[in-house]
Image (cartoon, rainbow, N blue to C red; front, side, top):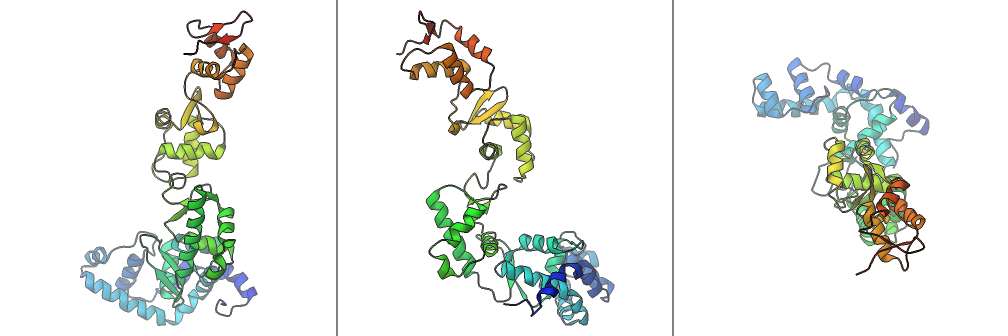
Length: 363
């Protein structure tokens, strides 16, 4: 499918020529003041939230039904207006982006790609959506329980995106762990069903996946089932777990807090003291030093330095030397050597052999 038979050189200049806001306001410039204000408010062309029929009716002292009639008639007139040609570059650019991304895109993803393609003429999402509504090349797909709001080329069928999502879900349910974006794409394209589905382009795969609410990506571009805590962490503990797992080493709770906020998981900004208070109660985490947390799954065991020593001696086949115990503890805790030595001096807990090795009486 070709984008309105536009040649490559023309497409390459679209981003320099398209000025969406200027084109739209020129298009509506001849409307009567009240009609123009209704269109601006109804579609949020001023960058504010779209107003309801009732809100606009109260503002102008007319019924909500009258507002709806004015909006409907005006949109029909605008679509037939000769000034619609001012939107041609923006329309062609949107069409080009959709074709490159499998002919359909989640709303925010399309707006982001559109603005990224422009040369200094970026605009807000309401303006872009107004252009999509005015053009007869595009179709809106409403949000559902399983899919996000999207825009596609006219008469596009959602069957292919749904099958792509089903393929990835099958892979994820089998692996039971998230996949990096490149691996997620590869798993779809390499799947035995992909040829029957008819998808071959990486950009199309990602575009289809972004339509779904069943599979999502986290801030680290890992894809997984939306119900997984590593994909949609629901609280500060889940976010901290994901931060530590991605960093692969113990971190101070203030650093964990900083990285949670940098990752932009959404929701309230994390507070360091709250993070500290929550992690110390969660069995997935181990306090391995002053404010330093690690994951139990890395091999760290909970407890004080003395408890780490005790467990090491219980599990040992023979008494252990001071250096052996220091080495074991330093792999489990971020403490000074002298802290381990002081703990070993507790004669109520640890016994010494004549050759100065430590043991405890096993029950």
